Amino acid sequence: MVNVVIVGGAGSVGHNVVEELVSRGGHDIAVWTRKNPSEAVVPPGARVVQVTDYTDHAALVSMLQGVNAVLAFINPMTDPGNRTQKALIDACIAAKVRRYAPSEWAGKTKSSIKMYAHKAEVLDYLEEVNKKKKVLEYGIFQPGLLSDYFAAPFPPSQHMNTFPLLFDLLGARAVIVEDGQAPMSLTAASDVGVVVAHAIESNEPWSLQGGIVGEKTNMLKVVETAEKITGKKFELHYVKATDLRAGEWKAKWQPTFDETLPPEKVKEMVVPFVSGWALGIWDGLIDLEPDWNRRFPNIKFVSVEEMLRGAWERAKAANKA
Image 1 (cartoon, one colour):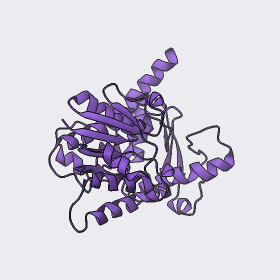
Image 2 (spheres, helix red, strand yellow; image 1 turned 90 degrees about the vertical axis):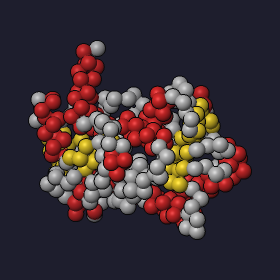
Image 3 (cartoon, one colour; image 1 turned 90 degrees about the horizontal axis):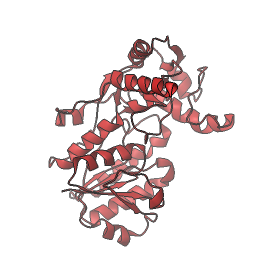
Image 4 (cartoon, one colour; image 1 turned 180 degrees about the vertical axis):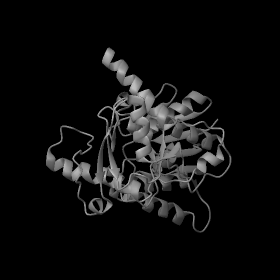
């Protein structure tokens, strides 16, 4: 049995990891959340623990006694200066936790997505605390772009909070950066859970490279697959990398995670995020090596076609209801 603490495990990606660990049985799983425990939705079999104060080092150390692994799913917008993650790391070391997974869960650490800039700082901190001697094993999990976003608004799990990020299956449209052939790794959130569960149950040192590749493809191939499934011709919105670097979004379609946002908020919040991902794809942010795939070659990953076909079938069923 492995005692696991999943910080932020009630969120989208974390929920998939919790779900997989619970389904395998035999593990003690605690989900730490800032929410009221009654409001946190987690799979039956996992415990919910409300933790709101990460400045109380002694309390954190006490709560982490006997824990084997800590996985962090922390929204960077809620952790200025990485104070929460650093406090968590310090507490893990003091409590003699064996393993720690920082809040990665996307593409390469150094990227064009400004809100992800904190990731490199956390990795630097982990390297620093282990400089003189190894005090905390850590590993990285980078699945690239979750293919569940391409299934919006009908992802496989109702717990995934998705929106049409650069690709809109139902609207038959996609954003194409330059020639649309930049390699990108797409991985289903459920498969992230499977990989993490395997890693937790393995005694091998965790990977510091951390690539998880559900499928290596490019945006034009995704569009081609979607057109085959839906029978629709997709509208392609081309953007240039130079415009994205200049902070300009010139495509007619502006993907957004909230249709009710006023234009000024879209420009302030949505454009940097969406354009960051678009530019990141072109810059190789999610052109990952299958590090974890090589470690666990028996895992069968959900293909992009399976993800899109499933979403399309759920959409048709919803229209009939």
